Image (cartoon, rainbow, N blue to C red; front, side):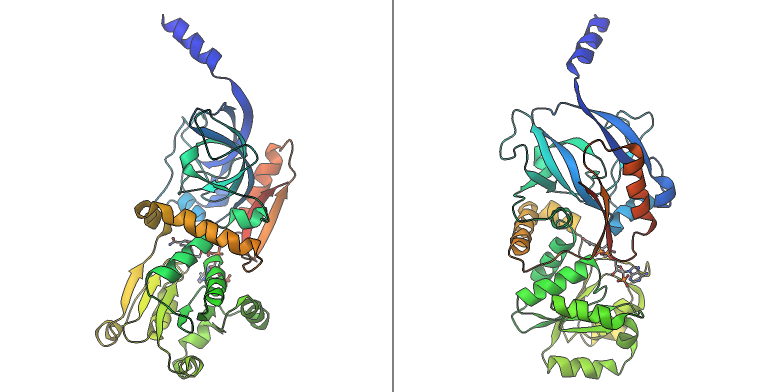
Length: 371
Ligand SMILES: NC(=O)c1ccc[n+]([C@@H]2O[C@H](COP(=O)([O-])OP(=O)(O)OC[C@H]3O[C@@H](n4cnc5c(N)ncnc54)[C@H](OP(=O)(O)O)[C@@H]3O)[C@@H](O)[C@H]2O)c1
């Protein structure tokens, strides 16, 4: 009896194709920790969609997950890819093309592009079967793979932070550090489109004029360096720029002294929203900011926000894609690691990720692009 059940299962499990994934089975330094594994991909179940990778970025959260220091992490399992040891697939963001759909799936068809709805999907894989309701279908018309692969985290975060903490109106100001990051660049552009003025703080660097021009071209009203911000006399310059309009909203993606300096520029009753900690230093506030200026400090985490407000991500994504198609919004600066479509070899796939992980914060956001 048992034997015949086994045979039935074996016969019914047809493998549609084989895939390659970048996985980790322990936590540590990403480049030393990730490895490639191959797996077989069965036909999609009735409620699943089979997709192939078009492009996936390396985001700071992906790195932190592999390091084991991110609060939300995919479970390591042998079930998902049939591996001999428990593994988790890297990557939370990316764009896939639909290859086939299960018979109960509606609203997504072969050829469509899809992006993850939530976190921990494991996007660093060539092909996979995912539940249709874990994906957002997007119309590829007028979009590049880079735009689609990077829309769901950074621009969406900027979109939500700019609209949800303070009701800003045209002519209002906000200030942010990490002005050159994916989130920072998206906030600058949305600010421009929504009539908001922005002060973007970036790390000191030799080519500061070049970066200042680049961010100004995106719509930054003013760009300043961390060392300028830390100079107390800069407050007078900021007052002059804003002509007395209170700066009521600040974004902090860095932590440490940078976040303190951003908070100091806020007006009475202002709000500081911390969304990242690139310096790995704590956020500290002078007591006087709380008592005498009544500053409110918030945290924003897209993953939590989506869990609590399910429909908002798709609405924000579709709004941003519309801006991409109209040419009013550009993707963050990226370094593409291109793999030719067709028969992707182990060496090509693993090599592209290893190169991307080696320099993951240098020169822009690193992305694996297929085709
Ligand atoms: N809370 C959320 O929901 C959410 C969503 C998206 C992102 N994030 C977080 O936001 C932060 C930025 O992410 P991203 O994807 O926008 O970044 P990104 O495009 O990959 O760029 C990284 C940025 O971090 C800066 N940076 C790197 N090391 C730094 C350090 N030691 N001190 C200060 N700045 C440093 C870089 O500055 P340079 O330009 O000078 O190289 C660059 O601007 C990360 O902490 C990420 O986890 C949070």
